[in-house]
Amino acid sequence: MSCPVLPRFYEVTSLLFPRVQLGVQLSSITTEVKGGQRVDDILNRVAVEVVRRNACANICDCSTPLRRCNLRRQLHGNCASIRAEDTNVGHLGLYTVDCLVAVCTGLLYGIMSDQRKPPMLPNLKGEVPGTREVITEKLVIACLRADKGEDAVFQSYKIKDFTKVGDNYISVVTSVQVQYTLGEKDHQVGYVVKLNPNWKFGEATDVLREFFSKEGGFYKEIKPVLDQELMDIGLPCLRMPHCHLFNPKEGAETLFLEDLRDRDFKMFDRRKGLDLDHSLLVVKELARLHAASVLLQKKSEVDLTEAYPYLKDGFMSQDTDYESFTNIFRGLIGASAQLAKACGGYDNVVAYLKEELEPNCMTIYRKMLNPCGPFVTIIHGDCWTNNFLFRYDEKGRPVELMLVDLQIVRKSSPTTDLNYLFYTSLNGSDRRKNLEKLLREYYAAFQEVITSGGLEMDFTFQELLEDYKTRNMLGFLKALIIMPTVLKKDGERFTLSKLDGENMKTVMKETEQLTVTLSNDPVIKERFLSVLDDMVVSGVV
Image 1 (cartoon, rainbow, N blue to C red):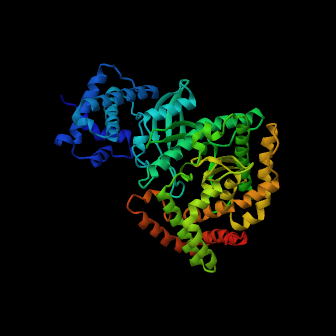
Image 2 (tube, rainbow, N blue to C red):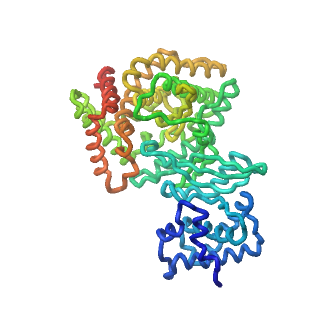
Image 3 (cartoon, rainbow, N blue to C red):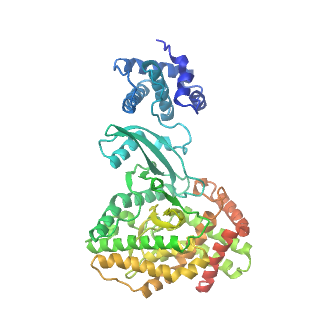
């Protein structure tokens, strides 16, 4: 059986994809398949079979998005069936099958319709590698229905990458644009999608599973009850994106989140220190998160770590010995020691970093995270610039904040979040000048939630200040570990995705050599040296 319209292949695909020569893409996937058959031959056979199967269905009207959507859905089902039935096709990847769907849709569209507006199809270009295998149509539809309701009729989606180097460090972040029909009207909505980066070294698989379990669990289980606690006392919900879907499948963990760009939220430049206005928004929202968890714990009959096990220590636990991450932390502190040496005038600090902090960093880190006394809350756990999004007024002033990236959420002292924030995300001069004001504003916001909930504060402002100082070492550690990396210009950064089971020492040595060159960068030098100065002033060194 022949397919008389196959010669129109390039004509049809150029109509569907005016900026993409699909035939060339298919050829680049593979020019030869099982049994020596060329892709063109398989396309011919599949196209013929899809046309034959759909001919009896009398699908001849592609005039509306809904009808085009239904056609594509049926075509996709037919291609999947053929893929399962025909061993010569069955070994092809999903990407190729989607290409077949596109071609067959184009063939049918050319035969059965006089319309020339192309049907809605997934984007075949400009994606983060591997996302097509993880972001499936099934997940996108589930996300859409969770967001818009069961009456929303899915039409199509495309994956659209939008992040740049330096935006993300422990996950892959992209977005999907979804076309759907609701109430006989066409609509479009976007979602931010976070995916497991599947690092290939040491204990990375276990750690990544923990990270996504924490964030998915927080969004789907803890945030709703914390929001309810706040609403019950007349306060607004936590300022975080809405999570529409969490797929916990191991190795393919995926979070579909509200796209805050639609509400004009933006990421702050990580190379700039947060000023007072930005910092105030952050500490007030952290206070609401911390205090709401206190209200929840007071009402709970069990400890929150029992109700929500992913709040436990995990990879930072005393019982866990993740050698790879210990070596990474030590390597990054060693790199900071070399940077301090290159800057000059910090011999005592360099000696302390090399002789005391580098070999004992994990023990010290874990000690700083241990909560004690009244200072026990759910904490964000990863409080630095990239994990805050801001909305601005017409004069460019920050007026609203969203907290994002809850992958290290746990129970600890709330001052661990504050130390992390102040030492990684503020310039030294702003941190010293505004410290008391920021802590007092934090305390007031915390107190508002607690007293509105009918409780009394368990600690005074002076006790908060003392606990903050007690945990300064955590701030120092975090700054030394991440600051030289996150403040680098795009393309100059250390990234965990470079590591595998063989190259740990090589990558860490290259990172150290690159870090030393940063002594000439005025932005990094000011921020970094201010941390070293504070270590000296606090008596650590």
